[in-house]
Image (tube, rainbow, N blue to C red):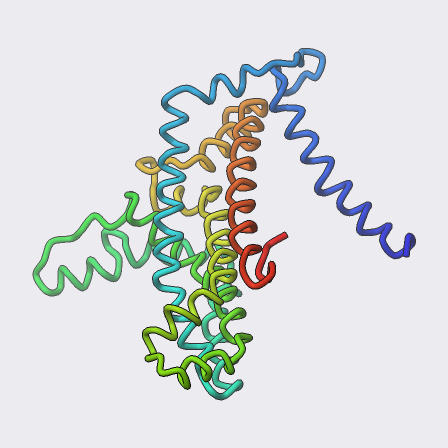
Length: 278
């Protein structure tokens, strides 16, 4: 067992623990990022983050992430329910396959595709111009960013909900029908409560990449929509301030861990802990 687990331990050490240690180390130090001898322990990076500008960016990131997550839920639950209630397993598998196929395409290419749809000379505005209407500003705003998040992360909401619904014991629904419950009552009192663990998992799986994304906001939001992921990217790639970038990364990780803990607690309280993330 020790020989078998050694490669996994080595992998975790090199690609998880060491990078995490470096991020924490940079977050709690200041100095020239290229000269380790100038590093000194400090909380200045976290104090700097309390500037209203950065707090405003964090607030916008959380707002757009929560909005996109709820939209994914409103769209994803009916989709997952429709797929899960198909009687033939082949039909369910084909529908899931059609839904997952776009995920096989590169994330960047999928996001770029929306530029040709929403752009000033894109498909939608070309059609509007053909009808005699003026072009709309569909790009470089919060709405375009939310659209990009929903499009890219919707499968992360559908799949966990579907996996819970398709494994649901049909005898519970039959028992509710025998007791005289109508379809609305069955969904409200039986189906939805049992699917909450999948919903909470979906919320976490959508919120986590949405709050940390920077590609979507770069392409669809332009300079008008800056999220916390964009600021972190700028600190590491353009500004070269790895200390401040690491501090913001730590704060973002803490927020994500809090969300995961809430989701885990909510899912773990139902069905004897089934559906919990960890």
